[in-house]
Length: 117
View 1 (cartoon, rainbow, N blue to C red):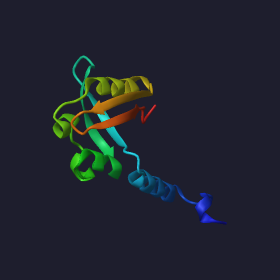
View 2: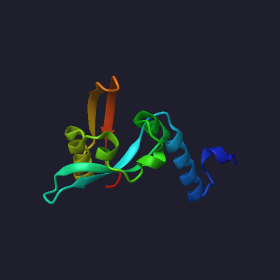
View 3: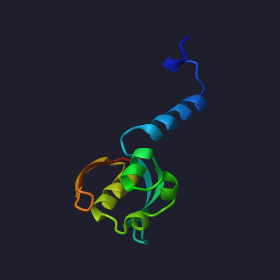
């Protein structure tokens, strides 16, 4: 049996392969924990994971992003993006945000979705 077809492989191998693909895919990806105030309003987020493409976009190595708040990395936090992230985390809603960064002169298409249901 050909091992490349995914049959007969253990969960550990599949998890390692998935991590490899996620880490090395050319599309920027990060997972973040939404931080809320005492009334449940989002005010920041903390990076839990990022892949290499996201690190290049942020201009920092992945190791320096893990555990950091977005406000620490970028100085400010886009309230609209935070609201979308909170909506995904709290209500399981997927959202798409189109944005432009004048500083980096880049257009972004950002997808937010829940990692857990």
